[in-house]
Length: 279
Image (cartoon, rainbow, N blue to C red):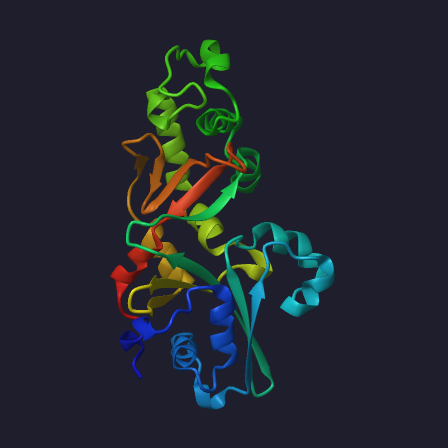
């Protein structure tokens, strides 16, 4: 089957969660969708010896590393940069060759649904991306980690739309330009970190599933992570009308709510991936 015919289909039954998707991969010899997914990944079903899918937990103990084929010295990077959302690790055997594929899973209920792809403290992102202390200071005001009114002398801003935090479009023009310029110049590493991750559990693929509860069907699309990063990361870097930041189709905003109300978060609309069609 030509790859362009694959990539986005509607199937009978509901399999929108990671447990159900693992089950499908583990039943690959008889499961139609699992076979299509493996084909999209470039595998010839006839040549496969075994396929084993494991759900990756949010927290991983050092003692469990061997399950994921990860060396102990990689543990810190592995845990820190793994994608925190639902993931499946697929261990594929072709003859004596062992291949590993990591899937990032996104569930979507409607076309309008946002899905968080990464969230951390400003300090964590500063360590990862090396922006300067001035950008870090304004981003802490943006997340509410620093209360704007306590810094009105330093910022020169006296009136706030929300006393708990500062929006990007309330910041001085030169600060907005500096933040935009940083995210524009470092777009490749930023998009890669928040969508693909780093190290032993970085994602190779993104599988988006959309469950239709009425007729019990699941629409899915499976894309190579480089295609995903290019799709969501391309476009203008600019301040949104509401005062957050757009990096292409990715939105950076204050986390809000509990827990972690003062973290930075990055969001996408996974359903937009259906627009791509093809394989």
